[in-house]
Length: 339
Image (tube, rainbow, N blue to C red):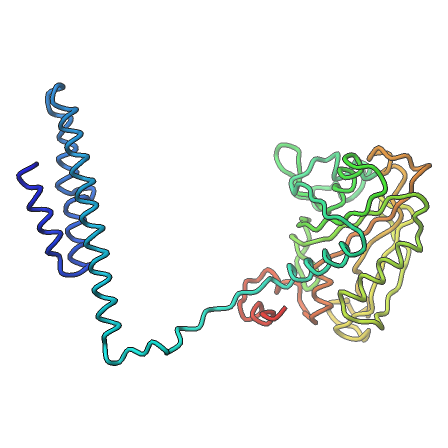
């Protein structure tokens, strides 16, 4: 081993370029290299000789690796010096343009909504995407025979848990953790067994909102929602309508629709020719949900809403098909570099 040590070091020092150095490296320290063969041969030596032989082999490996690293750095420095000295080298010439990344449009809208609601006194809460049946349904006053519990609408897991169908479970988790007054938002990803079309996806993003305090009323809900939508959609003249809607976790419940900004109310595939887009189911928190959160409904009231971030983003930027968001087409995403 000692006899060949200097021979190997000389070969490394004489390597004329990085390609030759890589061949030497592979021949010496590669899996089938001669030094590795020497290391494997230590096990065949008498037991008394193995410790010293193993130590010597490891020291040789370290010495050769250090020599390889030093020679590689020297060759790279020489190559750079030659490039800088070349007559056609212009140090003032700009380098290649870097590809500019950008936030996904849904993320950009979510961030703006978080900033808006934070300015209104809301705080951000989060919860698990894999949820229990209790938090996703029972604590939200959704009975066992409700269609949402059907296997056709919910992604159930083998252990009895499920992929949350809305961000509403965080309402109860938050009420159990904190005491009123509460003003929270919950941005998050949700999952439902939807038929995918221009306005529906099996995976979607939602922003839950919850306010609980004394004397909270429907008027507070309507004012907050109108303020939010006018800011995020950048339309002071935004036309909205509130109609009755049934949701087990609110009473009364409402559907807040906006006049379709894509067709101006004339009818298109996104609004299903109705001229309106359902954007924001909302309502006053049901007393049973308040009780599930450990709050006395005789003392406190509250409102809640669930905003579809994809639909808000579609309205804001005039995007005609929800499937574009998850399509991975860079031509679509590059339109939002300035978002």
